[in-house]
Each structure stands twice: as structure tokens, then as C-alpha cells.
Image 1 (cartoon, helix red, strand yellow):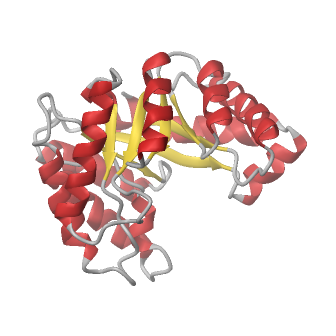
Image 2 (cartoon, rainbow, N blue to C red):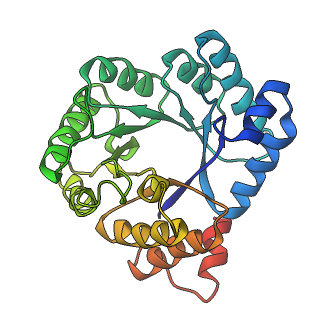
Image 3 (cartoon, helix red, strand yellow):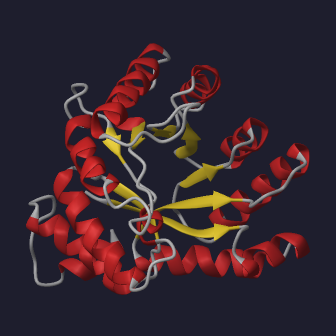
Length: 265
């Protein structure tokens, strides 16, 4: 079943940033509930840019506990700070996710053992110190490195979420078909296959008609093998697209109330 990873509890948003500053749980919990009702299977938790790592770890702990006080959803700990990631994993109830590692060996050597230690899922970006590749072949080669390292560190494939990295269509239009093909080929890298994810809103960044671009790309990507997306769980037409694509791809059983059931699962 396709998984919506709700993107809204992120310190880059003004209301979340102010709630963090004031340690006001109300806004955090309102968004946790709204995203759960919208159809989120995971809640992405991001403190936003906090330079001090100890402070970021403390904030991450507070955000995770605050959100999970009101919803029974797993969390994706979204940070570049290993200290904040581990603090979030320690605070989380049940299964958690690390968001994210790249294919840089120094990062894989830290974050894959952390995922194994906490039995956590992990998002793995198909990029390294050279940046985001342009073509499918380079993305898949990096994905293979991620698969090999995950296996070596004892992270099962069902907990590995490969992100082939979509860039904005207005500046990198030629990347879109490369990402779609990479999604197809990633599924051939192991048996069982790793899972896949993507930061959906990146594809439409600074473009007009962003909702239309997001919906269209989501359906195309799901047909190519996308298992999840970090996305707006409260964009009803977008979530409806995910629910409908899941039915048309025979990933969920059709019934007349399939959209409602997608949100309630």
C-alpha cells in the first residue's frame, strides 16, 4: 500500500517555527491530527535550521513526543544532525524512520548502524559528495551502493527507502524521465526489493500550477514503482490521486469508498 509521509511539521514553516520557539504544543498537535486525518501513514518531523546540535536534539525530542501524544502514527526523524536523529529515535513510540542518508560512505557508516540499532526504516538518497546525478544509470549505481551498505549493516530491504531525487521541472525537465526509469530499475536491485520514496513538492518548486504538477507526477511515479512520498497530506486532490492510483495499479482492493478507506487505514 502506498504510504503518505506528511511533510508539515517542519520548522521551515512559520507557524511551526513559532511553536518551537514558544514550546507551544497546540500547533504541533493540530498538524499531527490533521495529517493523520488526511491520510498520512508517517509524520515527518523536522526542527528546521537550528545550528546548535544539543538544542536541535532537545527540540526534536519535544516535537516527537508532542506529536505522538495525540496520534498513533510513526515518525520520520528528518535532520542532518546525527545527535538530533538519535534523540528522535529514542523519543519515538514504535517504528521510526531516519530521513536521511546519502551514498557518501562516511554517512552510510554512521546512519545505517543507527537504523539497525533502533530497528528503524531509513530514507537513502541517490546522491554523493558530487551532488545529484543527471541520468538514470548514475542514480541506480548509487542506489546499488546504498542497497549493499544497508545489507552489510543489517538493515532489511523493506526498511530501506531509496529516493532517486527529483529536481524542479522548471530547471531540470530532462531529469523527470530519468527519475521515473530509476524508480523502475531500483526495484530490480535486490530480492526482496528496497522500497522507494521521493520529496514530491520538489518537482513543482517555483512553478505555476504546482498542485497539478504534483498530482500528475505522483501518478506517473507510482506507476513506475514509487511506494511512498513526503508530501502534503492535507491536499485532498493529491491524496485522492494516490488512493486512486493505488486502486488502478491493483495495490489495493477496489470498493466504492476506497478514497475514504485510504485515509482511514
